[in-house]
Length: 358
Image 1 (cartoon, rainbow, N blue to C red):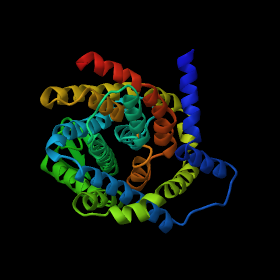
Image 2 (tube, helix red, strand yellow; image 1 turned 135 degrees about the vertical axis):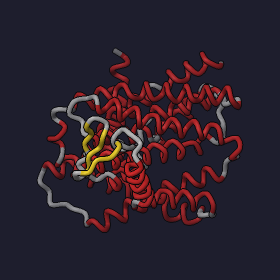
Image 3 (cartoon, rainbow, N blue to C red; image 1 turned 30 degrees about the vertical axis):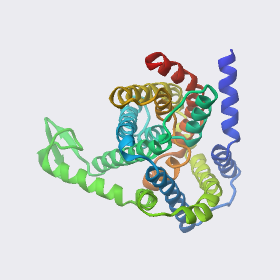
Image 4 (cartoon, rainbow, N blue to C red; image 1 turned 60 degrees about the vertical axis):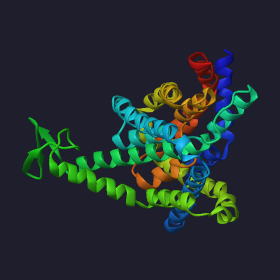
């Protein structure tokens, strides 16, 4: 009974935080048929500023770290982000009624990282006197960016396959009346499909959302943007994020009817995914421990990052790169269900890490 009460209280706390509060506010406006709207150029500017800020902060974190010590944990974080997205795609596609685009957006958010959940994990470790590496914060962008790019890339490949009308028949792929070997988009290795996959990858990296994220990352890593970051980007961030959530809330309400038949699928995924993902992170942390002495606290925080789902970098990135995905699905599942479960699972990862290496 106490566990149920804790879950409900944590969910209530999430509802009071700006991310969900403004999202719900936007849904209320849409439900009331409000004429509130944001001009598209202003919306795009907000998204670009948000992603530049996220990239800058991530790049600055990496620049301040010891890159040699960071190498193995960063690789594990990258593998975790990619693995979570691919696992989420397989899982969600098996749930009846979930579209490919919504599945990938949801998997992308669950593969990306929640800064607030990571901060909660750090606070719990410090309260228990468990030490961890000082560069842990720099692992954030490796898991985050890897997950988001993977989700966007796979979603766009699936959309390209669908729009091109590709069909597989007896091991051959038919495209517009022509026949060739099935490739990456259809299950084989034809050179044409490989070229299509390369085109989609380049298009993804050049998209406004990912371009802004990677540009900010590069500037934060190789330049010294501390002054402009502190004076301009950081103070504006939460205000801009609230406006983004407001607009996404209105979009979510407009598409809420699409979820009526599949709400149970997202509920099931949101409840179970943090535990599976956290176990993946913990396992990869154990690999890093055996390879280079990664600490027990570091293992816990890698599991916490893997169990969490993005509430900052993910929504604007996915909104910009996958506009056809339904915000009701991916934000509602991640922030409304996944985040409370991830927060409550932190003691589990602490106990598991202590059992494995303590």
